[in-house]
Image (tube, rainbow, N blue to C red; front, side):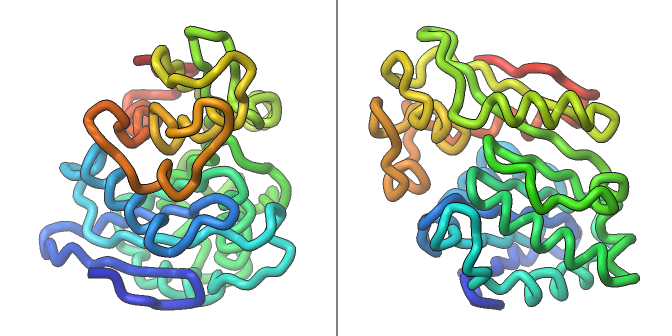
Length: 244
């Protein structure tokens, strides 16, 4: 099960003594603890089960979109990540406003001498989130950095923050760059950018006109799989898009 290790921060040890890899999932605005846990578990089961992962961390969503309240246990999480300095891979995934929480953790690691080595093991995926609060000293320390956005190829609608992801990806192409996830069956209505935004959590969101966070983060099914295509791409080079 999950153990609380900080305010809004949870750890699950899969007890695989042969594995040392880490996954950290930062959920979006107002996503509750259990929903974030369900999302991280689905990511692991769908795309990372054979990747040597032992430790799962789930971080609930911030109470405000820009994470101004700073209410989550980012200091505790940074301290725990120092214990994984020998991990072959630390995969950090942040959706939407969760990116601001992730950036706070990364900045804290950069301020700790022991944290610099940990940063070099992190591959970070910013899923249609923000770009502020990510210091230059962090960018150049990370193993790889990807700015991920989605496109519904049926309607031609892009996710809500696609322009920001493309801009940051072009500016930081040397670090990893932008990744476009092209999905042909999201069920989103034409122009429903926030529905496509949630298609980076679940490939067929529950609200075709917007988003339903409670269901989108935990009600996965064969016809509503967790969105995880971006995770496979970087191990095979630097992609520009992944499609279904």
